[in-house]
Length: 164
Image 1 (cartoon, rainbow, N blue to C red):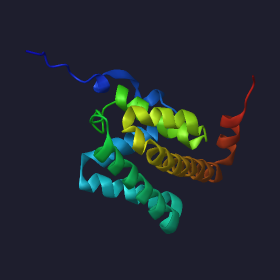
Image 2: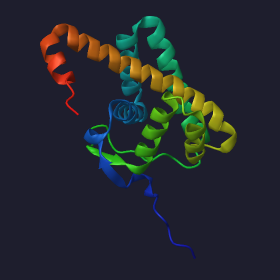
Image 3: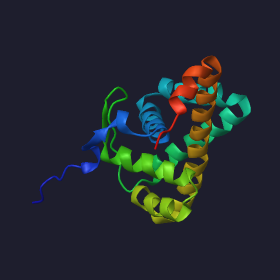
Image 4: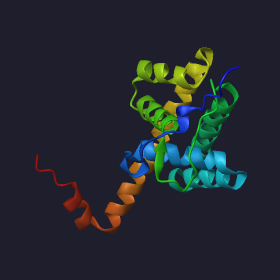
């Protein structure tokens, strides 16, 4: 008789608030995508609102394909916390770092990380989609920063000062 071994993928490894922007967005959109059909539409709406109808639709389609690939070819189900949870799970952290790594162009590192998530034969496809999605998330963050700076330029300049 064998004992049931719980998945460690849901173990809390940190706080979502401590994640950098792209990583935090990856986790939130992962959670939302898995939550419900309405939440999936919210993800699509976010991409469209931030990137415009053409680029937003392309980014949304890439995110949808990324999620479908994870569901269909995951080595095991990705564990996740609820949308409102402030904790960061181990699988969520791995996924977020994977997307961010792919977006920086570190393809070999991202490919290695992808093999932790999906079957080896699907890792290159997952990596390409993660790169596309990560770049879309970066673009969304930049547009958000530019919008904030245009609304209050003095505050933006004060926040961007670096001493060391």
